[in-house]
Length: 230
Image 1 (cartoon, rainbow, N blue to C red):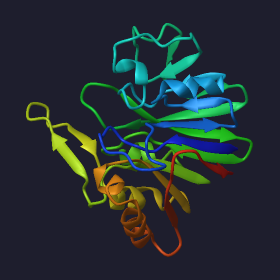
Image 2: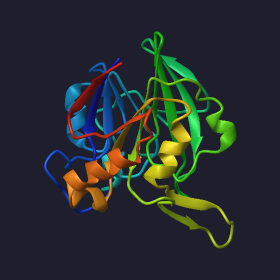
Image 3: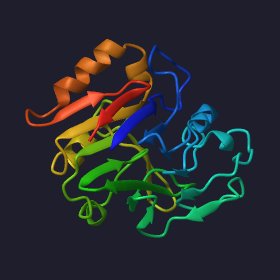
């Protein structure tokens, strides 16, 4: 698989060179996961898979528009803004790729999924935004060639809040927690969806990320347009 990180900026005002666009990855020049910028449609993807329907992952949500042109789309829940939407309820195959959804805790208002993407013997996990992934769900991960996850917060614990009525958590966990979570499954972790802490001083942010990496795990900060081959 060829993987192109189209955008690495979270839902923040700050920008930096190579970190201006919102979430999206392109697989083999034809499969999009997340659509944080309208321009990503210029790649003419065969279909789009959404982790969740927040505007930095689904640009059309911001202005309450419909997704046009109509394109085969998969998402965790229904949306009147996507006329071609198929709701993901379990593993599915499309154009030679197998997608296995992994339930993710992130938001109280929208449903979220991570996806294991398989082609041949290669296995990629793309998470979108993460407050937490329950142990039972993580048991499905197995051995992965790469994990692409978020870098909203550098501090352990990130920014997690709890609904006062239901007790449910939501938000973004920290990079140290994500590394600990995914290290048993992959030796290569790529961070994207950066918060202000990173954008304000990119070189210092990269240094801090390298310092967090265990000796046997490669952890790196992606940039807009960066490509990887699995």
